[in-house]
Every structure is written in C-alpha cells, then in structure tokens.
Image (cartoon, rainbow, N blue to C red; front, side, top):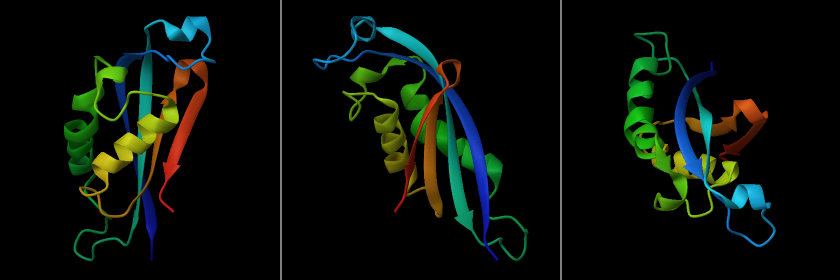
Amino acid sequence: MQFEIEKDFTFEAAHYFDHDDANDVFKRVHGHSFAGRVTIIGDPQDDKGWIRDLWKIETIIKEHVVSKLDHTLLNDVEGLSAPALEQIALWAFERLEDHLPGLSCVEISRPSCGERARYVKS
C-alpha cells in the first residue's frame, strides 16, 4: 500500500538572467518569493502508520535547501549560475535525494507570477 506525502516550503531570493535572449527587465537583479514542494512516495511504517515524520522532512528541507537559498542571490549559489525554475528544482532534488528516501518530485514556484517547474525522478 503506497502513499504520497508532500511538504511545502518557502524562501526569498534574487536572481538575474544573462543569456542573450533574456528580456532586459530580467537581466537586472530582481527578487521573488519562491515556494517549493517535495513529494515522497512510500509504504507506511507498520509501527507508526506514516511514510515519514513530516517534521523531520521539514528539518531536512531547511538544512539542505532553504538555509542555502533564502535571502541569497541565486546566481552566486554553487550549481545555480542559471537559476531558472527548472534548475532550482533540480538543484534542490539533488541535495535532498540522499536524505529523503522515496523522494519522487521537487516543485519550485513563483506564486505571484503563476509559474512553476517540477523535477520528477524518472
């Protein structure tokens, strides 16, 4: 019997795009309120009835993602020199995968813009 659980998180950060076809507005440093979501798939533990303790998941996300991205210039974060939503989702997934067994997806969004990207483990 498998379940999916999800945990949301947020962070504030700035970025810019310097590729040739970037709009002039986006070439300038600008910031967003980002939202994220991790999805974990698994069987519930017999003794607890849950896949994993959501509080522990929150702690892992804060340690490995939020503390590295919150109030930063994303372009300066190692591995995020081109910080599009897709790249942030992949970056977060790579930092969480070893710590969250059953991790299947990381979604990063900019709610005020109505934009999101998901990295789904294949």
